[in-house]
Image 1 (cartoon, rainbow, N blue to C red):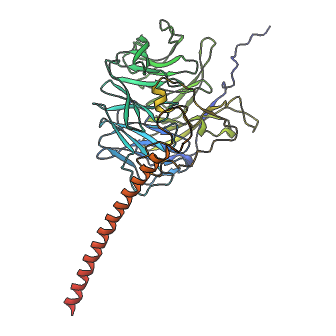
Image 2 (image 1 turned 30 degrees about the vertical axis):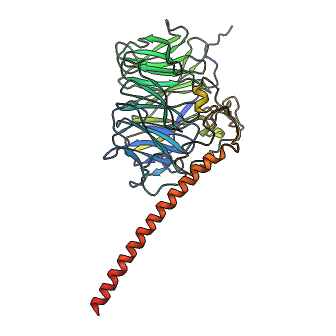
Image 3 (image 1 turned 90 degrees about the horizontal axis):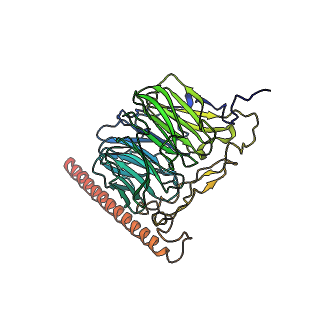
Amino acid sequence: MSRRVVRQSKFRHVFGQAAKADQAYEDIRVSKVTWDSSFCAVNPKFLAIIVEAGGGGAFIVLPLAKTGRVDKNYPLVTGHTAPILDIDWCPHNDNVIASASDDTTIMVWQIPDYTPVRNITEPIITLEGHSKRVGILSWHPTARNVLLSAGGDNVIIIWNVGTGEVLLSLDDMHPDIIHSVCWNNNGSLLATTCKDKTLRIIDPRKGQVVAERFAAHEGMRPMRAVFTRQGHIFTTGFTRMSQRELGLWDPNNFEEPVALQEMDTSNGVLLPFYDPDSSIVYLCGKGDSSIRYFEITDEPPYVHYLNTFSSKEPQRGMGFMPKRGLDVSKCEIARFYKLHERKCEPIVMTVPRKSDLFQDDLYPDTPGPEPALEADEWLSGQDAEPVLISLKDGYVPPKHRELRVTKRNILDVRPPSGPRRSQSASDAPLSQQHTLETLLEEIKALRERVQAQEERITALENMLCELVDGTD
């Protein structure tokens, strides 16, 4: 009687492939800052990369279609007075990105659909609350305008970007530098890792540590943690002998790991990128030239090695495309944007299929750009699962509309509080008032500029008259 020795999985033959040379982004001076973040963020419209810049921090934002050589004078997003350490696109607005810097501030930027003529220097809002460098940013997965930041002051702050207010400040939970922070699927819990080697599960609204595990990985090097679809915690870290290690943990029973596997010996921190739709986790080490990927299941050994994508050049950072930005017609289940020293190279992960039809087993409904909650609703204790969309007909990013009217209308296209409802007549006067105020300010500024130009013209005419009189 034959015995089945090969595990059945539709993802067993996933393979990675680097894009052709003409599909890469060339001549980009990727940041050399020594910080364990991905240095790259991507969404279905834009690619953002932290770059080298004199006199402060900067990042470049490119439309996905703008491949090839990037002009050395291409406009940057500048405004920070020290190097930028992390960037993150808003999951509910593809034109909004947040940046965190060594200058202790967080800035939120509005990126236009057109290519700007000059550097973008004015953020929508600057968030100031940390006393030391800010190295971690993470938007809430389901609530509108809710942004988390973690700094070198060992404090986690959760902001309402729409008002610039601090919603929550978690300042007594971490005695040392925070290495990573991750929301769970509905944004009700946080998983954090810290230099004190403790993995913590935190309820931010109650301000409580729900569960914790000391020395999930015994090594002193930084640890990373992400929530899985089943509510488990997937971690990467180091053994006492500096071997890289991955683990899977059940928050309800932190005594023993669900799985623990040693990998290799290297200094590079493994950055985990988890796809909840396929339950595949991709491990990208800084300084490595490979991407390893594993499938997480309910069957022992729970974390199953699938394959490794290898290349010649080491990676400086990595961007991970949300599922709605993938090409479903090619059975693409993940796309990475690998940073080299002077370029960014897309890497596509594909499941080989013969049929050209939509593969609904590969593409379950996935989180879309619509938030499920307002910030005040989440803060009051409500939870909601992400609003899902189907990828059967492909995903077309919505046109950028709601933020063009005014910078004061900060990411706000809905009423700020109360139950979710459509815009009513009682809400209209406030938005109209903001619009009127902004229009009046713009008119005033234009008049001042026109007046200055008229004064300049008068001065030039007087000079011309004096020159004509002198020649006579």
